[in-house]
Amino acid sequence: MENRSHALMTGIFTITLLIAAILFGIWFNRDRVKYDPFLIATTQSVPGLNPQAAVRYRGLEVGKVDDIDFDPKLAGQILIHLSIDPATPITKTTYATLGYQGVTGIAYIQLDDESVGSPALATSKQNPSRIPLQPGLFDQLEKRGTAILEKAEDVTRKLDTLLSPENQKTMLEAFSDVSEAADSYKELAAKLDPAVQKIPALVEHGDRAMQSVDTLANEASKVARTLQGPDGAVQRITASVDRATTSVEAVASGVELETLPGVTGLADETKSSMRAIRRTMNNISDRPSSILFGAPGTPPGPGEPGFDPTGK
Image 1: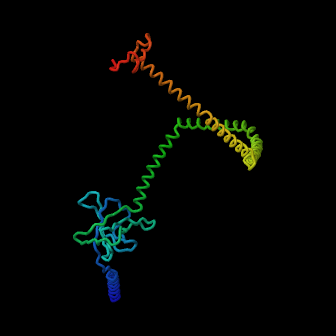
Image 2: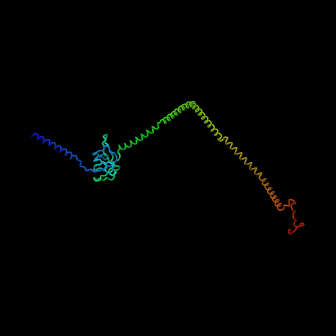
């Protein structure tokens, strides 16, 4: 009996000591920090996220996920309850994304801020503040991957249309036309080869012609310098022209001196004749009968017979 009592006491003591160690470990490891409650409401999927998952602010662990459930007020919306260290700078511009730990697929909440110095976001247990959940890297990759697949399908459809039998026939005909054009080009090159071989001779003849032109230009320059020299032909011709001009001016002056008096006399006689003609015309106009009976006689002057002093 004593052995049995001793064994029973030993067992009870061992169990009590084990329970005390467990309670001491729980008490020693309990979290003494008072966390602030926050809430994330989202309609996005949250694969790999479980209660007690870590909450990190720019890589630093600042809290944990308390619970995940559905929003009873809005169908399809998920509510994620967070407990975050009060020292964490949660502001009105803070947002959350889903992060994943390596290749395990275990998700955690990653908090970040759009700017620095924004107003702090107040919260309470009765009315926890909400932090918006934005698409994470994998969500963006999924959306872009879907868009890439759609574009790939579109490209595949266009390639299928491009490689239709009708288009294949058209492309084969185009390749045939290109082949024929290449053959024609080869024939043209063969025909032009003799002319190309003559090009060096033509260039040589052209060089010779240019040299002849240069020689001719030099000779023309020499002739021009000879003609325009101090005793050149141009200067002699100019002197002869000057002398001839002087002689012509002298002859013109002599002719003017000899001819001018005769011309003046001729002009005076012409004026007298014109005055006589004018008088004749005036007489005819006054006495038209003078054409038939002649001009009337001159009336007698004083002392002559028939003179009338009264003029009647």
